[in-house]
Image (cartoon, rainbow, N blue to C red; front, side):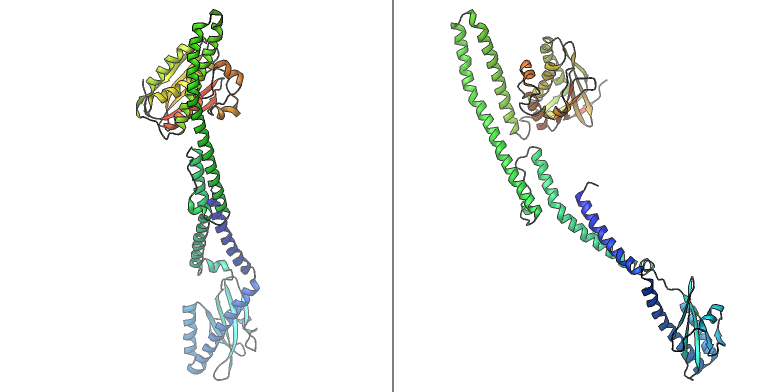
Length: 456
């Protein structure tokens, strides 16, 4: 049970029900009080029955008495017998238990009781209009002592209404407590997905309790994060633009230096040229990343045949792979069509493939597979290199992230390629992840929404 709303709702509701049940049980475990109440009500009723029987006998005769006892039996299921003062039976059905109880009828009007399994036998002494003393013995169905019997018979509807009302109250209370948390969670998800303008609702912020404090703190935090990241992106973009001018002048100066310098300076000038090209490449990637970070979707949308795009990237990367004594192979390519920017997606896939070419072992092949998975096109790029520690896999798509500085410098990496890939794929509604292959190497999987058909 992971829902806070359900936990609060059930805890409050069960607590109310258990408290109500405890009160009923507490009342139900006091049999003396229940029996005393039952006996009081029963003795009053039997006293009225005895008085009515004595009046019918004295005023109207034996036939009236018998008729009265029959009506009592048929209407109330009470079998009654009337005795004289000397315990001689006058009318009704006599039983051994009834005669025994009749002998204990109190002379002061106190009834005598005998509680059987299914019936209660009560005797009551009374005076008729003629002044004669009579004893009425009544055998009646035993009244239920347990409160649960009353609950399931006469009070079940009241309990159903009580449970429904308590459930409604608990539902409203739980919703009042958890609804702002759910709205805060929605804002947190938007912020995590890159929507830096996401804020919790203003009406929740106006609450004067701990939840309101939490929402206000979240909004302040989100505003500061947005300010910091926006400033950082703007700073990177500005610096990248500013670096282009001195870099261009550096290339001009490099050309002039080659004209004036002799052959001895060529190695140093070649080194300067390579570093300038690398710097130019890094600035270009920084600008591309800055543009994509501020974009909400691909700049253009057209239909793209992914199998053709994958084969083109594999063919281009194959030339670079030959220099490292390795190859690039397309092991599977289903027909998949998606919409987006061909140039951006090509660059995203190419970054992953070139990265795999850099790290795969000599004499191995970088394997590319395009398959249909759950309504998406999945592009798996596998190398046969050393792999990546499990704890570092989630960091591969961060800008400028490097496992080891020496390794990146040897391969000429800038730490921006996979970050650009991640942002490009997310702009197209997809996702990218990395995992170590079972037999060694790294597998980078790009998932894009697409329509795929199986080819023979």
